[in-house]
Image 1: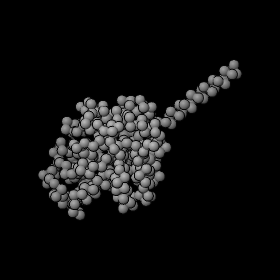
Image 2: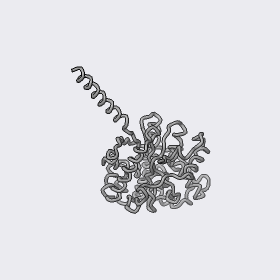
Image 3: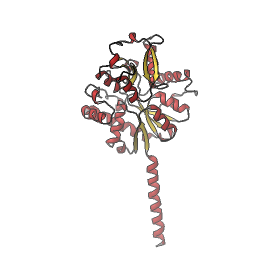
Image 4: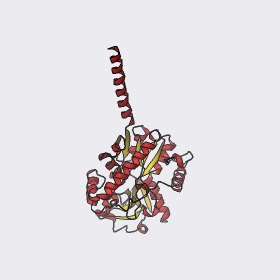
Length: 316
């Protein structure tokens, strides 16, 4: 009887330890209401992460500021983000790496652009028409970076735009649709929605050829099995979306990743777009990381030297 009692204690203790381990292994992933994030939702909702042995909890946020705060507070293990976010957070001791890109390269796909409100569409028909107009944006973010890249590459005169900070994407969108803001830098699918409402897009990021959307994980969660599991799950999610775009178009509307008004014209993934090595887009290059790091350093947003392998996860 004594032996039985000992073994019973050992078994119960083992079960409790396993439960604790499983709970600790859960990965809390912060996401934003962007069209690229759809693949994360598909992988989670359809059990693709679980099929790879991953326990992922997808937590939605309305702005990058909120995700950043959650990362600082150690409430997230990873996030849907961009290179710039990882550079700034790494500099502040929130060590993480980008493990995969969600930006599939296809000619018809745009990720960000400068939208003109429907009420101002006749007045501002090209970048040359910009005359000190207010532009809703989010400072010290990928939005800010792209606004600067647009001004640089299009040689816009100083003062052509007057940035006004509005961090929450949905609020920024509404200020443009209502005419409170003449222009705004927005991600898809909100560019398509502005066009559907009678607005226009004067510039978008396609010509830059830079991937914008990634999944990043804290270094404490970076193992080869975890990264491979994420890649396989997202790859399968992309195949499902490309195979049945109209089904997932409706899902995006239901999850508020795609406004109903923009659903019929929004460019979905195609089988041709995902016909890539390993089925996934390429990662940021050394040149991409260096360019963004220099932009941040010039604004004193990061101080420490940046090494490519500290930003991009590479399997041995």
